Image (tube, rainbow, N blue to C red; front, side):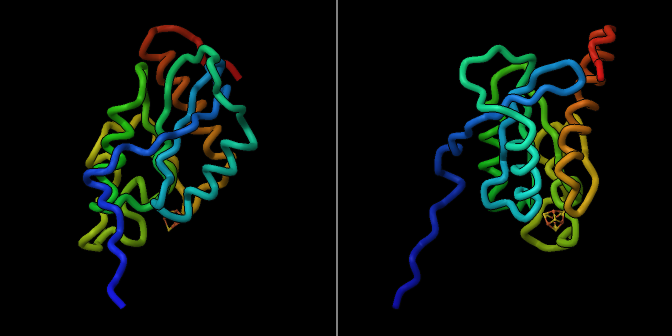
Length: 158
Ligand code: SF4
């Protein structure tokens, strides 16, 4: 039986994402996920998002965050790039887990990037394999502190 060809991620449109709004550090972020097919960390970040946030709808937010969680392969890299390009401004990237941070256990595989930072700018790196779901909130608080610091304000609250 002939193999069924897989869809080509290098030419497919960026996947539609339904962002979740999460409040952290005194800011409200629309959190978009790039977990599609990337790997196990996606389960943890998805759990964190759905425990911590609410559907975005048309609510005003302070920024948009792309959460990249899991192994970024060369095959999926164009999808992650397109998701980043489609993110509204102001936009940020949070890398969730050692695979996304630096390749993780697969760092020397021919098909794995040495971290999503090789592809798009990353604002916050969350360590762990996998990080606990709560670590996503901590990462968003870090991001809020960075943004407040860059603006010269003290907008980062609890
Ligand atoms: S960091 Fe660990 S848990 Fe996360 S995707 Fe990689 S191997 Fe899986």
